[in-house]
Image (tube, rainbow, N blue to C red; front, top):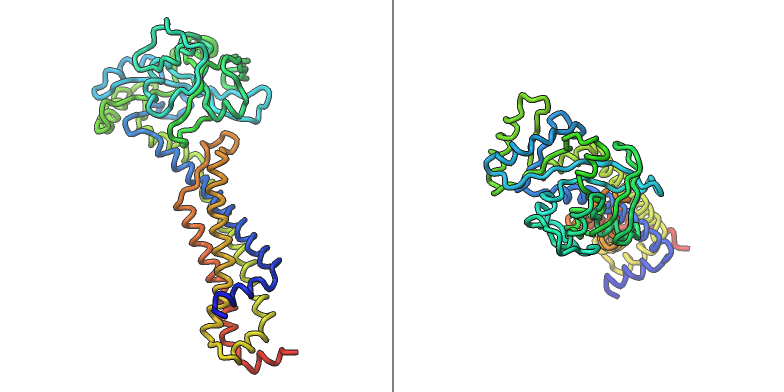
Length: 398
């Protein structure tokens, strides 16, 4: 009998205990990688932001608007190719108020061409060829562009809500009170999943006329640059223009703007990491206790093996390999399960996140933790078994 065969026989001695211990490790590493997946998703959402686009907002806070009159001067800044603007709407589904998804009022003529490289229109309702489309806008958006109350929704949101093209969707306003009807005229697909497909886009003019009384204010501006190398100069120029105005600005790259949203989570990422490690530590204690119990039950057996000529080092390796198979096998299964299940299901925490991703770095970290668990839980019982004297062990033989 070789060493590996002996290990397998020992693991099969108590199949229920071995199986339950391995399943506990699977669950622990699954939860660890799933929680780390939230951090991976947030980091991926930051990287989606383009370095060739800048975001200009109110220097005080994002909740304070900027005058629409700023757009003309922004267009005149050297290095700026295109300027669009948008507003956060913040409505709720009247049928299910807890089912949150984002809504943005956008300057469609400029906003849609600006993001054409990030999304594609995969479904459109009643395209009208006779409508003159702005330069760079997908012709499939003709119906959307021609109707003031039309909207575009993300593919994931469209499927989850089981909506249909041409359907009128009511939204209950929170910041802008009242019931707002929107007609779905197109569906977009994000080329990068981290971009997100859980949003609704509609015309800023509709919001301005009905919700803001025609006031010329916007939430933020998006500036498309003629070349990425101009970002620093354009940022300084824009903010200098309005440094002494009633609504001074803060301009940053879109990637930095996204990072600002992530920072609003505060200590949540830290807490997620702590919870994940706490789960792993708890299961480590379970695995260590299991190996200690298994070792105590086999003291007499170790005495017999040593009598037959097995060396201390061999006994040590046998016990350590048993622990490694349980923890490494379960840990690897749990880490891979987290990646493929979470990414395969496109889980998005009810629309609070883009479709979640679990990076291979997180999977490797999970496997590394499993190796550490195996070494930690198996070292002490393996050392005790290897140091056991034959006389003391055989005293337990009945």
